[in-house]
Image (cartoon, helix red, strand yellow):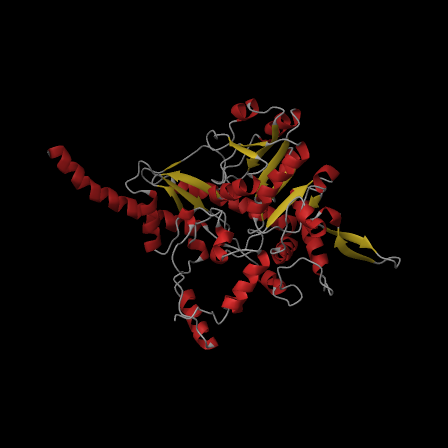
Length: 470
């Protein structure tokens, strides 16, 4: 008789434990829990995992071997962005968030706070100043969730279903948003024009059924939207809300979306003092003006100043706690987790260190190096910009007429120790430039890609000559 497998790390794999849990919920088998998952998305085979390692030192050795398979790239040679960015992280940020009183993702109700509520309040205040908004939430899981929640808020506030997306958005973000809002919001994608919103088409689609217009600036391709004020006026004229997704790293030099008519601003704080660890430490923010219609639809936690019974003393606690899923439970507007509060403290430390002048200098540096990289790389044979928009940090190279495809250029860069960017398809390469990429780094990348293109062109020439002779 074959004995059932009981994992040494997971006690609930014991047959009696599994059966007790099934009986408690009235299920015949575990398969019932996955009935809604399409068959083509199921693995249908055991996971490729090693046998359980009983000794701790064996497990440490195994995990260490996995980690050694990762290849590190020098920050200056990394031109890969697409949602996770290699910005400089001051050492004091890591020092603060590794303190024992902060080192948890939880933002809930500890009996001993140790200043965590105050630290998050300071983060909210600094973000509010940067965004020029009054109210900023304790971080959500990531920027994708913040985007989806912003759209859901617009639907609840207006009582309408349609949201118009007028920018190029990250495809992974779109996937997350669609899943999140599917029951209540219809998302309509309006094609862009030369990298930015097609204002004429977008405004022509606005009517009393539209809940919101959604703008991403910078967009997935790094394009900066120049018509936000015009789009805002048109949206507000029909009672629609303006939702803007942005990266706060550029707001030391770029105009805050709120100043151009945005009602809800959302994004990710990964750029603010968070490392791109294996895909990034991500956390989302949502910001609104001090308007109860908007504030009371925010499902996230908010921390504010609270007076005490002792004159002159104050503390930090929840604001309008009764609107959250923590208070309302199954009656909540949407569920909110607490798995990113630590990153809010990290971003707060980063912003406090940088200050307004530091953020302005950083933004100017990134803008100038983005423009320089675009100019140098488009000097290569067959390489042009994919659009004519102004760009911050990222831009797309069109290599359709170049002797190498975008994936081939990525491979050539990697062979020389560079990550040249993300190949969107055979003809387009998304390149990212941060303050970590110096002018010399950009010149070195151009030299590497230029040499690869020249070699490919030379290899193609004999073949073309043979065709002509034939």
